[in-house]
Length: 221
Ligand SMILES: Cc1cc2nc3c(=O)[nH]c(=O)nc-3n(C[C@H](O)[C@H](O)[C@H](O)COP(=O)(O)OP(=O)(O)OC[C@H]3O[C@@H](n4cnc5c(N)ncnc54)[C@H](O)[C@@H]3O)c2cc1C
Image 1 (spheres, rainbow, N blue to C red):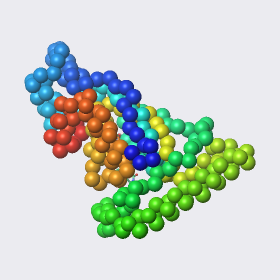
Image 2 (image 1 turned 90 degrees about the vertical axis):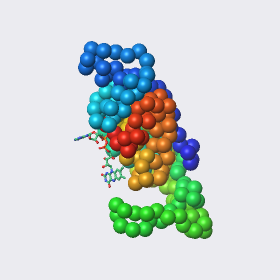
Image 3 (image 1 turned 60 degrees about the vertical axis):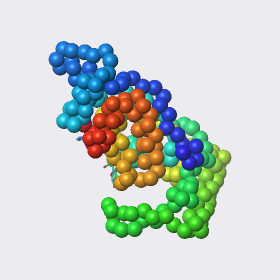
Image 4 (image 1 turned 45 degrees about the vertical axis):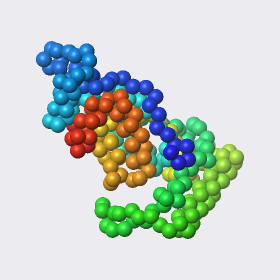
């Protein structure tokens, strides 16, 4: 990801079978392996929106991304977050500068914008302006720290394009809600790229659930 951003699966607990057995306990039954019958059960649960069997698992992601992406991410309340503190740690001069191809203009009305690329010279001018703004802000931050100002005060001058990192622990039901909204064409390009990475890492661990989610028009149960 641009600027050293990443999504890393730090740990996880649970798989497709956890969905099956959370449902089968209703009948006092249990399965030891996935088979076509159990895959069918996962598809049925997804289709009929029996959501709770998808909650008996946990995925702990470690993410590095700009603060403006985290602002969107942390709106997803069903999950746990812990983030780098700019009160306790000095921030590094790591900022998100969009690649030239990602500098875009918006056309249309709010809620129905279409984003279009700009000319190469326009993109470079934009990138230069963003980088200059970051450099000026960080120079002020550094000067405030050197002048003995507390980190929690100095950080107020830093822009939302600066990189931060956080842990996010979440279950599959909430992951699917996140993916339905953020790995979607209406989502901002930058968070969508992170959501694609989340979908790959999660989907490899719960492939039957992921396929059922996709087949169900990407609607979370
Ligand atoms: C394209 C896009 C544009 C957006 N634009 C804006 C914007 O302009 N302004 C803005 O403020 N936000 C905006 N958001 C954020 C959006 O409103 C949600 O806060 C965010 O997507 C989290 O979704 P969520 O509530 O479904 O997720 P979560 O908070 O993870 O909740 C998951 C599910 O749990 C249930 N739930 C959670 N909390 C409650 C509750 N208190 N009461 C009832 N049910 C609950 C709901 O079923 C919910 O879908 C935007 C999001 C997207 C994807």
